[in-house]
Image (cartoon, rainbow over all chains, first blue to last red; front, side):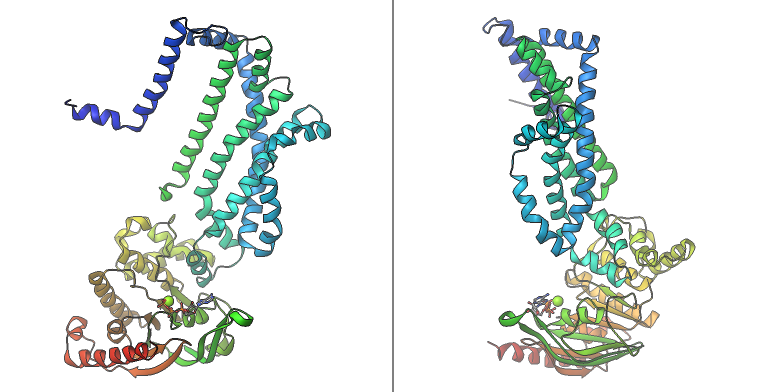
Length: 258
Length: 255
Ligand SMILES: Nc1ncnc2c1ncn2[C@@H]1O[C@H](COP(=O)(O)OP(=O)(O)OP(=O)(O)O)[C@@H](O)[C@H]1O
Ligand SMILES: [Mg+2]
C-alpha cells in the first residue's frame, strides 16, 4: 500500500491519532446504540446524552454543579499545595526534619483517603469543610513527599557553586533550589490534581447538595443513565483541561527544562 | 594573596568506618602563581580543593588565606567544578551575574562587570544563550567567567576540562593559559592529566592515594610563549615522561 508522505506526516502529528482514538470510541458507541442491541435504559446513545447535557446546561444545573466541584478541588488543593511546598523543601534540606516526618507521612500516604470520609463527617458534618479536608488529606502527603524528593535531587554542585559565590541560607533556597525544582513541583501538582479531582467526586457521591458527583448519584436513583454519562464526560473534560493548563504553565514558566 | 595549607589531614566517617583520605598535606600559594595537583583517581585531589573552598573542614591542620583561617565558603575563593554547574534556567550572562547579584551589587555595576567578564572569556556573543545551547567548552568558560566575576583571590579549578573531548580540551588549555597571562590570576588546578599540569602550572604537586598525600613537587621552568610548540618540544616530553613513570610506579606499588 503506497502511503503518501503528506498523509504520514498528518498521522504522525500527536494530536491526530489522539483525536482519532476518541472518535473511534464514539463511533462504536453510536453503532452499538443505534443498532438497538442494548437497552437504551442501560446505554443511552450519544444523541440522548447530548440532549440531557444541553438540558442540564439550560437549566443552569450543569454550571452550578461544575462550579461547586471545582471550588472544592481548588480550595482543598491550594491548601495542600501551599503547605506541601515549604514542608517538602524543609524535609528535603534538613535531615532531622526529614527523619522526623518521613515515616509518618509515608504511613498516612497509604491510608486510602476515602476511608477518612466517615470520620470527617462525624467531625465536620456535611458542609464544605469535610470535602475540602478530604482533598487535602488525599493529596498533601503525596505532594510533600514528591517535593521532598525533588529537593533531594538538586545537584550539589549548583548549591556549592552558590556557596562559593558568597551565597548562603535563604537566597540559596529561593534562587537555586526553588527554580531548579519548579518543573518537578508543577508536575507533582499536575499528577496529584488528578486524585484531588477523583476525591471530590467520591465525597459528593457520599453527601452533598450540589456538585458533579452529587448529580451522578441523583441520576442513579432515577435510573437516568444519560445524566450519568453527562456527569462522567464533563468530569473527564474538566480534568483534562486542568491537566493541559498545568502543562501550558510548565512550558511557559520552565522552558529551560524542555 | 597568600594561601597557606599546613599539615592538613582529613578523615571521613566515624568509628570503624573512619577512613583517612588526606594525610598531612602542606603547601603555599602566592599571588599570580599557577599551581597544579596531579594524581590518580581517589588520591584526594577534590578533597583538598573542597577544604580550601570551605565546603569541608579539615580533621587536623589549618588553612589560612591572607592569615585568616578558612571556616566556610566565600567569594574570595572562586570554584569551577568538573561537571557543568551552570544554572540551566539562567542565560550565560545571568550565570556570570549570579554571584554579583547574590552579593547585592548595583544593577549598573553588575551589567558592566558581566559584559566585561563574558568578553574576557570570549563569549560576548553568547550572552543571551541558555547553557543547553552552549557547547561543553563554552559552558566551562562561562563557569570560569562566573567564578572570576566576583574577583576571588584564588581560582580553584577541579578538573575543569575533564569532561571535554581532546581537541576542545587543548584549546581550553591555551585559553586558560592566555587568561592567566592577561589577568594575572592566582589558580590552583586539579587534573589527572600530567601534560595539562606541565603546560599550565609553575608548580606541580604529585599526589598518591590511600591515604592522599603529596609525594613529589616539581618546579616547572619551560618556555610557555607558544603552547602548541611546547607540547611537542623535547624538554617538555622528557619531563612529562619522567612524571608519568613516577605516577605509574606509585600505582604499581599498590597493585
Ligand atoms: N564525603 C565523603 N565521604 C566519604 N568519603 C569521601 C567523601 N569525599 C571523598 N571521599 C573519599 O575520599 C577519597 C578521595 O576522594 P577525592 O574525590 O578527593 O579524590 P580525587 O583525587 O578527586 O579523585 P578523582 O580523580 O576521581 O576526582 C575517595 O576514596 C573518596 O571515596
Ligand atoms: Mg575529583
